[in-house]
Every structure is written in structure tokens, then in C-alpha cells.
Length: 213
Ligand code: ADP
Ligand code: ADP
Image (cartoon, rainbow, N blue to C red):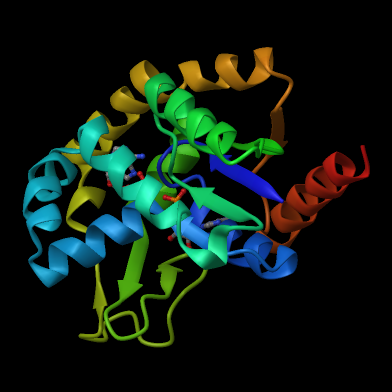
């Protein structure tokens, strides 16, 4: 199964990707996580990506596409993958289709998590991440044991001003890919508001329906 998970920042892509990839036995490939690991590691890729991430802008396509091409060439992604946070514009969607075509593969599904703007702001502003485990919490919806623990941090791009720009970038650059996937019969939209387990249930139902076809 080859699928991409799309949706606005804070829609719950990372949270759902973890469960769905586990259920399907495919690697979860999150471009945001790969960029953040490079930023913390101080690699040239991280240095390049950081200023765009801090502003809430997209990292340039040449950098991002190369990184994804490398990751998809790895052995564990040969028989399937779940991409979280990629593609984020039409050019990336075209590059992904090209990469798959070269290997005689096709994308099975683009799963869109639908969440309204108010809920997104609530999810992003309450998001906290564990430094030691990388686990993502929410102060209200999935509270950590100790909300004041020094192990928890707030992502620097989860500040109100950056959130505003990320939503703008999403509307202008990412939303058009829904049309791209719809035209190709790949798009399935699910309501991503509600308990995490209920959303996972809707996601898995959509995935199974697609596999049955
Ligand atoms: P994304 O990867 O799309 O940016 P995340 O998976 O990091 O989103 O989720 C954003 C925030 O919302 C996190 O704090 C997460 O704990 C919380 N969250 C995820 N799914 C839900 C849900 N169904 N209901 C409430 N909060 C959620
Ligand atoms: P979220 O889903 O919460 O917006 P991500 O962790 O997916 O966050 O992405 C964080 C940041 O990493 C983005 O704001 C952007 O700067 C960069 N990024 C991630 N994926 C891509 C991509 N496919 N293309 C360009 N930039 C990306």
C-alpha cells in the first residue's frame, strides 16, 4: 500500500500516521520529522531548511524532493509507505508520481484529514513534544503526565504568528493538490474531528475500501 496523508498543519497527520502505518506494516515517512532531525543534528540540510520552517514557509522543492527521493529508494519503502506531510504542492505531487512511475508503481490513495480552522489553532497551540521520546501530546486532548516537565517543549513554529502563515501557505499552496488527486481518482476525505481512535477507524475504513477495489 502506497499512500499519502494530507491535511492542514495540526490536523493530526503525525498522530494518525503512526497508527495507520503500524496497521499496514509500512514505514511512516514524515518530511517534517526528517527536517527536524536534520535541524537538531546541525546538518547542511537542516541549516538550509531551518529558516523556512521557522517562518512557516515550505522548504524549497529541490531540497525536499531530493530528500524524499532518497528516502523512498530505501529498501524498507520498496513494497509500500505512508507519506506524512508530503506532497505539499502540486509540483511535489507530480514529482512523486514520476518517482513511482519510474519503478512501475502507482499511488493507491491520498487521504485528506478534514479539520476546521478553529480546531487547528486549538490543536497547534496545545501541542507539546517530548524531547526524549519524540511523542506528541496535547495539553488538553492528550495530556502528558506532568505538563511542566522540562522534557516537554513547544515547537517554535507552533507560535500564533507562524501558525497564521502556515495556514495561509496551506490554503495557497497545498490545497490545490486535492484537485490534482481528485482528478486522478485518488482522493478520499475523512472527518478528522473527534477522538483519535474514531478518526483512525474512519481512516482504516477508507484504506480497506480502497484495497478491496
Ligand atoms: P500534524 O502532524 O497534522 O501537524 P499532529 O498529529 O501533531 O498533527 O497533531 C496536532 C496536535 O493535535 C497534537 O497535539 C495532537 O496530540 C493533537 N491531536 C491529534 N489528533 C487529535 C484528535 N483527534 N483530537 C484532538 N487532538 C488531536
Ligand atoms: P505540520 O503538519 O504541523 O505543519 P510538519 O512537521 O509536517 O508540520 O512540517 C513542519 C515544517 O517542515 C513545515 O512548515 C515546512 O517548513 C517543512 N516541511 C515539511 N514537509 C514539507 C514539504 N513536503 N515541503 C516543504 N516543506 C516541508
